[in-house]
Image (cartoon, rainbow, N blue to C red; front, side, top):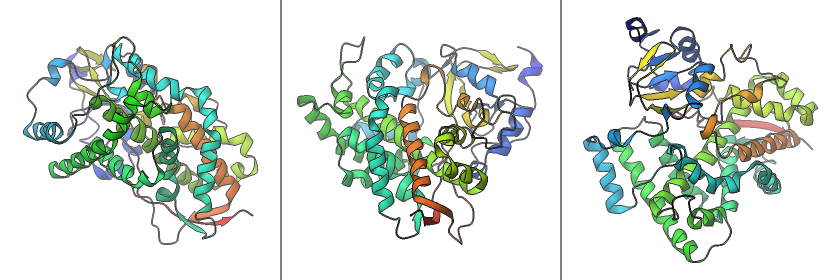
Length: 425
C-alpha cells in the first residue's frame, strides 16, 4: 500500500452526515465517484464507496467486508451513552439481537432460511389479491376528495397493512406500530441527540412489550402465519428456535422496517419521478402493460429507497488504492452506484426501456440481497398500476414548495407529499 494512496486528498471536507446534503445527496455522490470513489467521511470516519464496480466488489466479498464487527471490536469499552442504552433494555425490555443483515456466514444463511420460505418470489404472486385489495381500500378512502397526502394515506399504510395480514396483526394496531418503526428508523439514521435517542429506546421497549404476549401465545399455539414461523421454526444448525431478544430484532428490523419502511420510501419516490417527468406519466398511462415493470426498476435505480448501508473490514485491505485498516466501517452507497455513468449511460435520464435497469443495487447484492425484494416489486407494481387506473392526472398541491426529507444517513424518507388529482372515471 503506497503512501500516495493513503494520503490521497479528499475532494473537499464534505460529509454525508450533513442534513442539508441528505436532502439531495446526488451532486456529492457524483463528485465523490469522480474524485475519491473511496472517501473517508471526516465526521463519521466511514469509508464511503460510491463507484458501481467498487460497491459490487464489497458486496460480493463477504469474507473481507463483513456484516458485523468481530467480537474483539464489540467487546471494547462502550461509551457511557451506549452503556446507558444497554442498561435501559436490560432493565425494562429485551436487548435486541441482530437483524438478518447483521449476520455473517454461516449464521446468516441459517437465520435467513426462516424468511426465505415466506418471501420466495413464486409465493409472492399469491399476495397480489391482498395487495390490490388494500390499494383499492386506500384509494376509495380519498378518491372523491380530489386530494391526498400521499405519504400518510398510501405510502406508509400499504406495506404495513399487507404485513398486518401476513402476520395476523390487527389493522387498528398500525398507528402504534408506525410510531415504533419511526423510532427505530430514527435511531438507524444516526442523526439524533443522546436525549432523542433515549426517547426512541423507550418507544422500542414499548413495542417489545406489545409483541411479547403474541410471542408467548404462538409458542404454544402455532397458527401458520409468518409471525408463528419466526417464533417456532428451528434455526438450521443451531438446534434451537430464536430467543425473545432475536425475535424482537427481526420483527422491527426485518419486517416492519426492512419490509415496510423502504417500500414506503419507493412509493413516494415514484410519484416524485412522475411529477417531474410528465412524458413518463403519459407513456405509463398509455400502455401500463408495456412500461410498468421497467418503470419500477428504473425508479428503484434513480430514487433508491435505501441510500446505503455499512460493512466492516475483517482485515487490512486496499480498495481503489486506498488503505482501509481492519475494523473500519465501509459505507456502500447503493444510490451513488445506481447513478454511475460507467454502468448506466445518461444515469439521470429516466428510461423505462433501459436494457440494464434491473442491474441496479437498490436491493443490495450477493448473500445479503434484500430478502423482501420480490414482495417489494409486487407492491410497487400494483401501487402504480392503481395510480394509472384511478388517476386521470395529478399534480402537487399549490403551496407545496418542493420535497422535504427526514434527516437520515441511510434512508431516503420523504416527510409529506400533498397531491391534487382528477379521478379517472
